[in-house]
Image (cartoon, rainbow, N blue to C red; front, side, top):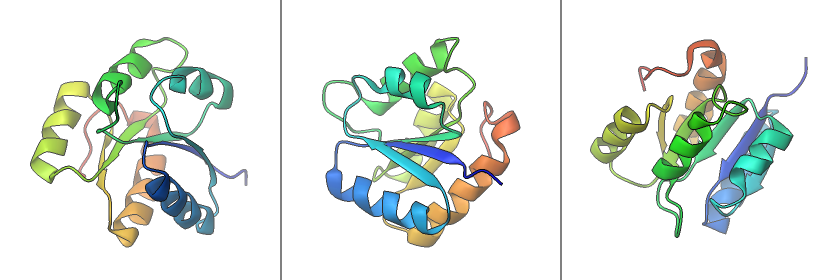
Length: 132
């Protein structure tokens, strides 16, 4: 079976490295990018199975970037999940407003692994808000 590809976009290098290592332990092929700018080109080139996207990034916030990604024909069907340290109420609101697949709170290793697996399983109907 081919490893699922995950792209993590986050301006915090520590979170990028930690999440990358944790998800690689699960057998995923993980790529990272630390800027919002240029992300759509990377997504088009890599065609990840899932994008983990930080909400709070300078210059181009994750919620705005999610709108750009899902608005382009070449990238609109790639599931996006917010990966953020924002509070859950704020993340739920952002998910509803941007119509991404869901969110994962930073800091909970088990939650990261379980929710990534869940969102990858649901990728066929990921454009609607999920149980997470």
